[in-house]
Image (cartoon, rainbow, N blue to C red; front, side, top):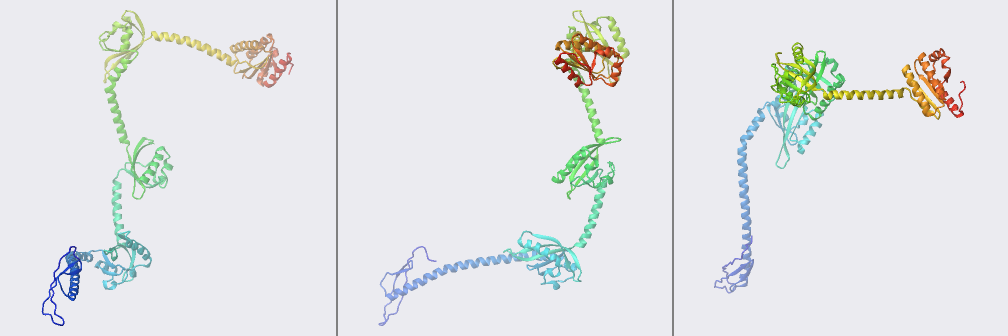
Length: 614
């Protein structure tokens, strides 16, 4: 390589003389700077050219020397790398030997092929399994002992290994033994790659699928037996349900009864078997568990002839996607919980009873007091003290509050015989005036039934009596108003045209109603200036002598007011009764229908004259 800094070089040359044979020895000095030469002292031109050539050759030698040094360094690095590779190979020799010993010593059939699928090596287990020796198969393709129907699947899977999408594959295929028979084997295979990623070898492990299947079946049967033993030990009733809540299987339980026999529910849906609200709810739960796999629990009750039974159901998804339902009878637990809650409520009620009682008594509008067995008041609420106009009453003997001694004796006798006294009492106020009260006195007992004290509840009847009087007055007014309304409704007057009134009668007509009918009819005729009044008795079920007499009186009274009376709604039975009173009912002019009567009345009203016989 060219040097980056100028360097002054001095060379001494010795040349022989030409022609006259110079006897002198000439020395020439040159300055070589950046590949150029200059004579610094006098010399021959030939000597100068030779010196220049020599300088250039020397410079090229120096540049090659740098390249040689670089090559020497590279060779040294390669030697070091080779030494390291040899050392690594020496270190891997025991490991490779161990792998080979493992390859040949394992009881599993193992084989090794090259990148083209040709046999390279196999262990004794492989020889035992298929009957071939290494000499039989070395260099031959695995396809030669494979079933032709299995080759497409095998090549597809090996292609995934070649692409690197899989690190290994496992599948079942058929191999031809040396004796010509075929066997099913489970093949586990992978590949080994070079540093460039090329497949240089493939390894495979084989298992006899038939033997494995037999072993698996035996193991599965053993597992099933253990699982069945475990299931039998589980106290829960187990069901296997489909996503549509259809019963697939059932494991009865000793302590949980089947509400229906298996023949009635296996293969059917839960809702179709029971059709209850809880079955619809659990069908939704089964669908949700089958979808998201989250376990769920539900409680439900079933009515039985022996009373309600309570169950707890746990829903979980199996690995097969089906839902396993574990049902446990929790009737006794629910009953125990109910009893526990009941006792807890009772204890809580007993603890808070006095507190609630006092809070209630303190705010009650009635006078409440507690009297000891000695007759002394131990408690009196504010309403009782305000009622009597005195206080505090605690410590006062109850006999001092009663207006007469006779009341005290009556109360004492009743309490001793009946345990309770209820009635009106006259009490003394603080100003010695008397107040009428409605009272209840009763014996308060201990838990063992022995008397502990007396309780009294007194109500001031002054306002109650005043309110009762007002209530009676309002009641009389209401009855009067209702009676008036009834009279208006039972004797309606309907003006259908100027001068024409219709009175429809519905229901039985007695003497009292006949009087009301007459008064209403006369008032309506006068008020409307009617010329014709139509009495419609279609709704009267029975017309007896009293009814007929009432109708005649009404017609005659209307006639005195200058109006005529038409009668409609006469049936066969009514007609028979009216015939018996022919002379009296002659004042009534019958018409076949109400429509006919209205038509005649309108004609009479327009003409201003009486009707003709119709």
